[in-house]
Length: 166
Image (cartoon, rainbow, N blue to C red; front, side, top):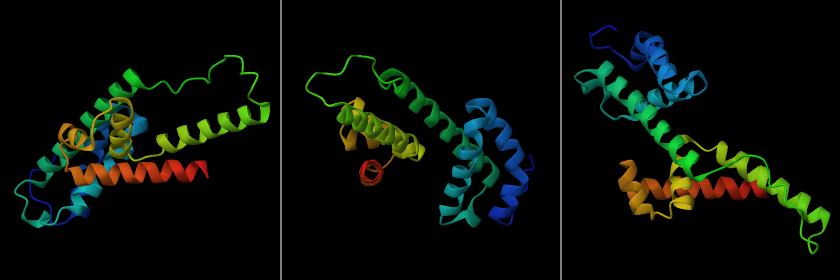
């Protein structure tokens, strides 16, 4: 990987894309590597003073590795607390009409799809809130973000879940 300072984000991307994609693929698998690579560059583009960075390639690698670590942490949390497997095979209650049961199952599938479609950090905040009963302040501290950012992630998650159920 070249050590000279790139003149632009585009140059940084061109010079480091292949190496980062290989590293991320090794850490999180090829399915998630391209998403993390994209998120890495989004974060770089959001940085206000990119031009003043002393070593952009090293900074870029740190962002990518932190995102991979966050994804691994989220996967562990999901594996520990969330089972999105098959729907229960229990017999329906006599008081529930078949059409209500079908509707409830469809809503569950829509909700599951909405949660899967959330951005990684947003989904992580949402799942920690639901399944670990942490406050948004605790989640923010645990994930190294501001409480305001945790609130924004939670708001987005709730909005998307409600929209999916409409």
